[in-house]
Image (cartoon, rainbow, N blue to C red; front, top):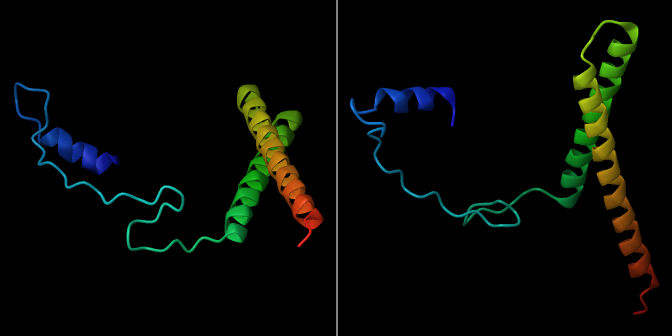
Length: 116
């Protein structure tokens, strides 16, 4: 919920009650559980795009953690908690990515060993 819709809802509160006077919203169409696409839509995200966005996110976390480490080490920052949190988050993201890579490599090796 964004700030404007929250403000609009607050203005519609009936005096003497805590319930906003908001008309019921029609239900949103159910999204496909795997692709996130609404009925009648096709998802245009490929596996390559998904992996690329995952790796870009991990890279961003690692660059941010590195910048915070340098800032802390050079005295430009005193945010020890934020630096530790950022470094741990980047480390976990990297471990997750490495685990995915290992699973993909195992699956590729298994497919290679199949006889047709």
